[in-house]
Image (cartoon, rainbow over all chains, first blue to last red; front, side):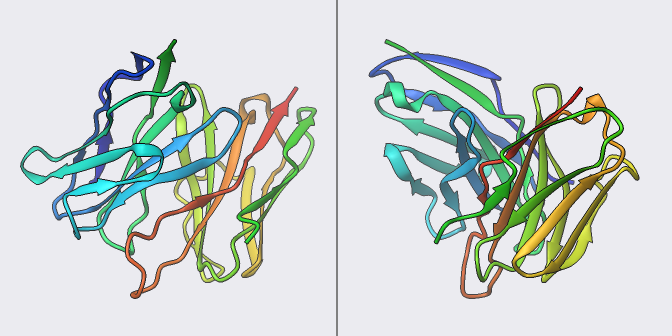
Length: 113
Length: 117
């Protein structure tokens, strides 16, 4: 069965510092991978997705993620954190186009001025 | 496009009452999902539909919960009777699963915050 783990339920960074949110997945085949962001009192919205086209994926708001098959990882990074990046971030995996998406437990990102 | 529309945005009801949550997916999308989010359990998939047909309802917690999709532009999630432990934010999401489109990302509505007292 597929699963997603996100190391660290809460991450704090200083404004301007590197953001690194970790995601590891288990899947028997190269999957579809997603990062979603949820701002307070809103629904989830897509940050970026991996669909086997390129291992380094760029998303909105300066975020990017790298698919590493050997490590079964899809970590999310941003070079310089902004206060507006404070939100909940969810990693998600989907084995094939016909499978349901499995969401990770989420990581809450705080940005300290 | 207006995105996924959910109503009501907030619902406060008393235990034992029937609650109906509504969702209008993005036009043209063929998948519709209902999720529940709580602090304790995180984001849970309750049920999803493909072309208005329920595909997987294994996440529906019990018989008090039911969902319907009478047409491609409308779905309901009903709780009868409601209980305090049903208090949560309920999200509807839709997606397009086409051979021409890769990724199949889901588009979420703003959610309905349900409080059962």
